[in-house]
Image: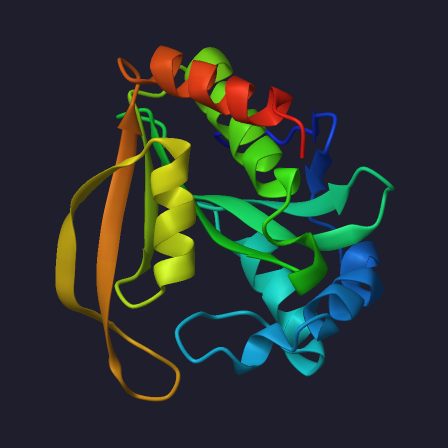
Length: 193
């Protein structure tokens, strides 16, 4: 049996459904909103590469990918439980991207709240990890706003598509920290926007 099992997670601002090939066209539209594949420091699929990315995420046994839908039901991005470890009960939340129009809204907070609650309260994870390019300051600020702590920087960790070396900033939230982080995320979601 695969771990974690496939689920749909529903919140007021976002719904995460298991990634399906049927989501292809809507995800192509979402990635066009801001031409996200042109960002050099992240790996967002272009419309021409969307089918291959959907297949890649669905095929890897250590990934549990989701399509992110906003409150109106429009597909606005992807996120994934990755590097899943059923023995040590750890997951990474990553390979996340949202259409530009969905960024800096309650959607990301809602998605992370859903994924973290499922990881800690259903899957009984001991820690949840986040990774991003050291120079992706927007992503790093978003991760820090969640309440994750910086574990460190993996220097020359990966080679990017353009051949440059990526330093990876690694963050985590532990099970002991989850109650405080949960309260913080609930407070953020309850604030008027």
